[in-house]
Length: 161
Image 1 (tube, one colour):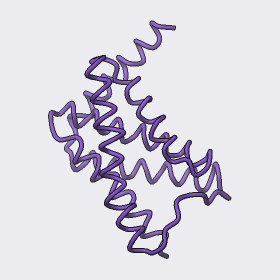
Image 2 (cartoon, one colour; image 1 turned 60 degrees about the vertical axis):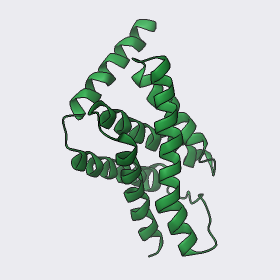
Image 3 (tube, one colour; image 1 turned 30 degrees about the vertical axis):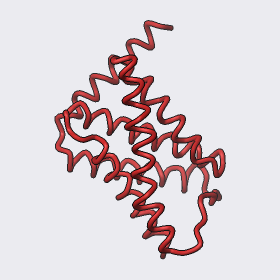
Image 4 (cartoon, helix red, strand yellow; image 1 turned 120 degrees about the vertical axis):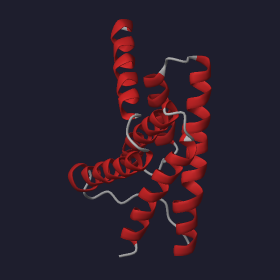
């Protein structure tokens, strides 16, 4: 079992290094497209009647929290702090770090089991983006926060229709 996990980590690290060759702009766009695709799969195929999620008193409050505040705070907590801490203790534990961060990210979105599951996948995506950009020796925090904010902004706009 241990050998399998080490092998999976090595494959994940190899993919992270391959993806780090892509420009930051393309990584942001790719992340947002994948995130939208996952959301569509969850919303229309897996859980079509699901509508749990946060509620807000006004559109201005929703915009500020969803598009600005949450992406910055969640990136700070779930990608920057957790990933940096674990990799500081276990420098090669990329896959474990990403999965652990994603589990906590998902659990922090406790509106429903479906929402937790969906945001777990978001956490995997944002965690991987963080590791990819960090591997490029660039400011991964800013790139992940931007991608997260763009995705949330698209969701915000669609909810206003």
